[in-house]
Every structure is written in structure tokens, then in C-alpha cells.
Length: 279
Image (cartoon, rainbow, N blue to C red; front, side, top):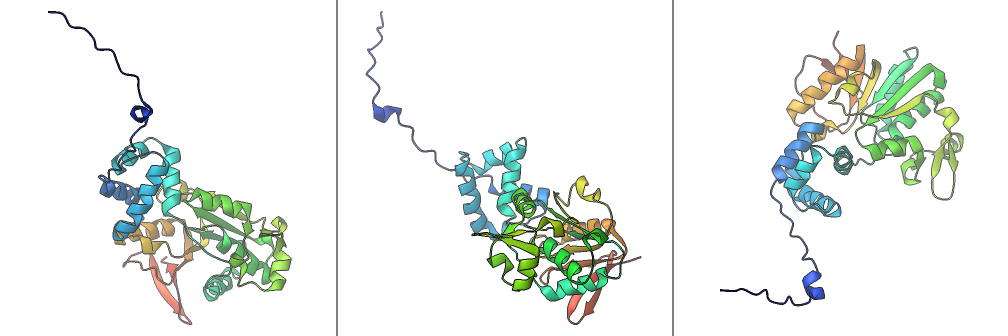
């Protein structure tokens, strides 16, 4: 018996067109566990919101399942950083919660060459605010140092670029704006000569680089712990304690709650709370 090949029909444009891939949502829980393990942020309570956000992120990268994203993150460091940037966006402004900043400045002025850490620092407004407030109280930039760290690379780039919108400066009066900033058509750029004592670094507080930052007199960490569960909160404040000098002070956001621990004692002044490292 003989078999002949049938003559192939010419391929039509419809045959060549590729069907759009259907997104597979399996693997979301593994992805959320990965995010929590790597940076401490618990997104399970925002499951429906974050699912849409992560799905759009995947589709922009032409990744069509959460499982595939999870697998790719294991070896793609650039993609990992992009994901971290996506889930750690934080908006802030100059002189935010000014009364708390003032309390910290009161302590800072008692310490020769005080060292302050802001973790996370977002796009730098808190760091620059503290520097301005110290200078307004008579401290020269070479008499203090302020380090801002954040896991979000875009935030650190913005902090280093030091160009801010009118909205970010809405609490500052005209005198402060004129002294510390140069205004152009769209933004305010800090005058670098006033901020030689500030520094910004991309650091994950749960990695070794954090413990290598040195020792500090004051740590600011406002509105980060609200995203952690108790285990990660305890781990975080233990790491803060390892960087703080004896009797060093920790300032948290009003909504931040820390579990019972052996590292800090809580104090309240004029309805403002802070934590002092136990000796």
C-alpha cells in the first residue's frame, strides 16, 4: 500500500495570528508567601486588590501565571527588585507629623554629632526634614549625620535626585523654601550645600547589609510595621535594637504596634510616644 502526502494549503493570516494567552491565577498564595518571607510585607489581607496589581505586572512582563512569576523570581534579580518596588510604594511629604519630629530633634540636640537612621525613608522627605530642622536649631551639617534606607530602588533614586513637587512642600513656609530649595517650573530641588550630611542607600532590613550600617542614636521607622505580622514586627525591632546605641531612641508611626519585647521601654510625652533601648 502506498501513501501520498497531501499538498499543503497555503497558510492564511488567520492561521498565523497567535491566540492571546489566558492568564492562570494558580500560585498566588506561593507568591504572597515569597513576598512576606523576603521583605516582611503581609499582603494576604489585601488579596483581591493585590491580585489585580500583580496580574497587571505579570502581563506587562509577558508572564501568564503567578506560578511562572514565582519561578522566575528565584533567579532574576532585576525582576525581583521591580516586584519589590511595586508593592512598597510609599507617599510622604516634608515636616510630616511635625510634633514627633520636633521631639526627636530635642533629643538630638543633646548629643554631639548625633547619628539618625530613617528606615524606611521613602523618597527622602523625612531625612531632609530632620536635616533642615537641626540646622534651623543651630546645628551645622558637619555636626550630625542622617542615613535614609529603603528597599524600593525607585524611592532611593528619587531621594538622591532630591527634586520634589509643590505638594510635597505644602507644610513649609516661603522662608524655608527659599533657603533650602531652588525652584524651577515644575519642582523644587534641594540646595546640596545644605545637605552634605545626608546619605541614602537601598537596603533590606532583613538582610546582612542592614546590620553593617553602624550604630545610631535615633531611629525613625514610621508606618512600616503596620504591614507586618507580630513575628516580623518582633524581628524588626530586634534588628533596630542591634543598631541603636545604649539608651538610643526609636520613633514609630502612630498606627505601628509592637509586641511585648525585651529590647525597648515605651515612654509618652505630651501624647507623643517613643521607645528607649533597654540598657
